[in-house]
Length: 418
Image (cartoon, rainbow, N blue to C red; front, side):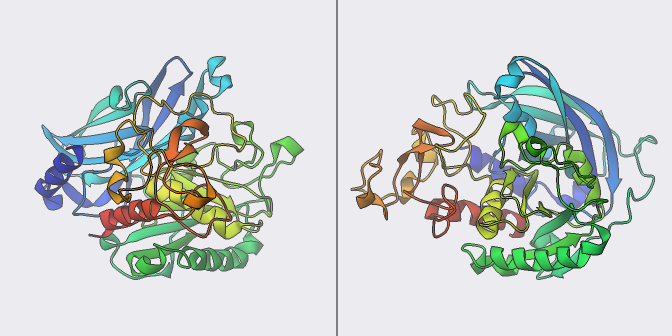
């Protein structure tokens, strides 16, 4: 029912009635600890050229830990879901002892009229967006709106152009840990990773739906921080391994800093290439994907992390090292399209399963080619289920994405392009 309402609301919103051709970047802070959290508005920046869809303005997926709604009077005119590293940190032991703050930025098309903006958080207990963290009113004519010109001179450089931005997925690659002398290497790396993307389904069959851009963000040093080895670099995004105390988890501490780097670029999805040969990466839905440019399994890690950041896919492994605790509530249905607790399985991939397949599906080799519900996913061995025995969201050695993940990716591509 939620999807039906969203799609119908979307069809009633006429872009030209509510928005200009430009965009805003809303910067805010997420703060708190395991017991409570809050949000505060930092600034709203004017940026040129909204590159997202002008047809699909209301998010039909309702993915993510957070959700932004924009109202013109009483009419919902735009919405978007997203995740943050802050949400992951909240489930760690450290969050029971100290409060922290994380920056985040969200882009929306520039409204023509005064708007009311709300930021909602998904409840762990109910699985619904029922916790209002922040709400405020904004008048586009406000003289304090930040319109002082470009924040940097970094222009998105086209690598592959297949369609107008409003009818394509604009994927932007950002350089991290590349010195000025290594920009040629960065361009070559982008070409290589672009090939990785279109070597695997369903991206291979949807190559014409993508535009690829790169941003030559220069770092003083080559490489990235490796805190657990006491290696520190001066880089444009201050990225580091050992995020949340996991060796291979490669992230950056300031998402707003990244958002500023792509301020002059068409952008629906961001991927950060880190100039290192150390294995690792990370992907956060509607935030960014990131991986090492020169490590083993570089192609596999890239498409896995892009699965997180672009399509909202969840991790299907359950035995690897993480520092999360109580990350999944097995009493509610998780929002990730490829993970289920079987609480509301009919909302997931139940329609794709053959009648004779047992649910739950035994974790046995005889079902290796079956589509079912295999126990073990989302970092826990019991109570969460994945669609197939092996998928790229579980194993680097898996041949590719399973049918459930492919369907989710295609739906996201269509959202941006149709």
